[in-house]
Length: 430
Image (cartoon, rainbow, N blue to C red; front, side, top):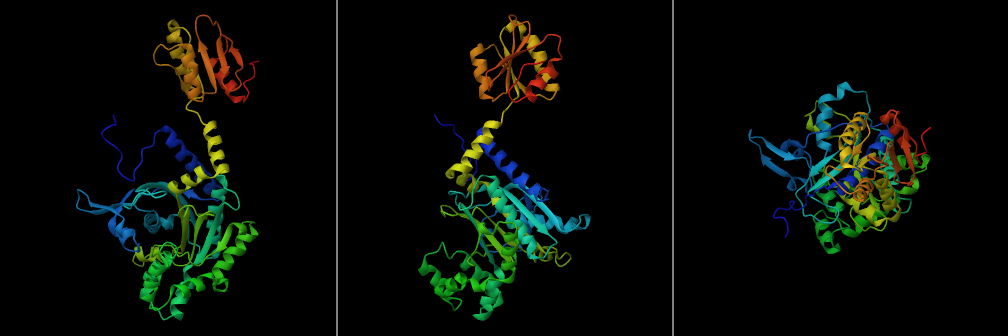
């Protein structure tokens, strides 16, 4: 009989094995971000609705988990992190040297139809550079995104960074006499050009006096690449990363606050939606601060749902994740109680080991020795320490090599066990 209550649609439970995947992603994201000199920040999950309605554009305003709190405030569960970051930077930017290189890993919420790679609750890795207007900042973020993919085990040819610039479409609209106030609506159509049926796109573009064929031809012409795109490519080429990138002007991003260079990452098989995406949003702080803070900014985000699916479908990336999981453990030492009369001594040992910073577990009730060793294996413990009347000395069994050694009765037990843990193969104590 099924349990009567289930998680809400689009939300997830994270049992320990599921949480291990989160830990793997968080560790990789954080490690690469710090290698690039980024500092971690954190924004609140609950924000003012006005903050996210002011300059979101597109479908985001319809996807908000929005309600009135007990204080009568119009609030939302944050759907992404950029507006929250802009608010924090607007308040505190004077306290930090520029440029700011900040990252966060946190939960976001969007009320949309749950499907593969898209959930109503998800974790998102955000990395942003604020206070630097040059294409070098855009290139730094693209390089960071590439190295995150490589850190997760993806190789050249398995993913691609599709690079574009919204400025080229501003020029297109100027040439085609599309009014500036129609730019956002026009870009919403461009953003969906690959997902919409051709006849649907034709109908939408006709409202702006252009055809889908004209738009596609413009997007496919490399001569239309902006100087900023060329500068980003040149920078990445100097890093040896240009082979991971291709120019694709059909990438415009769906949110209205993007203002310049943008990019998205896709698996080359195109088996799922974008893995990551972002770009330049130079005017957002000026808008949100109502003119009090004007700072160039660029950033990108990667959600856990799509990348988790792609890892499962990519052999090398899956192998790397599995190897990482095998190296994790819930404890360093499992204390096996061979004789229940020795439980008091075993509990004292457990307490001493934990006080010494050694992760330790043990059977809470009388349990057969074979089952205790199975529990030790299940916990991925490095060593099983056997306590019992028939063992005048503590027996330490390396659960990987299956070798065994003894802890002399006159030795400092905590230090002796720590020395064992410091040796990968568990050599005999000397």
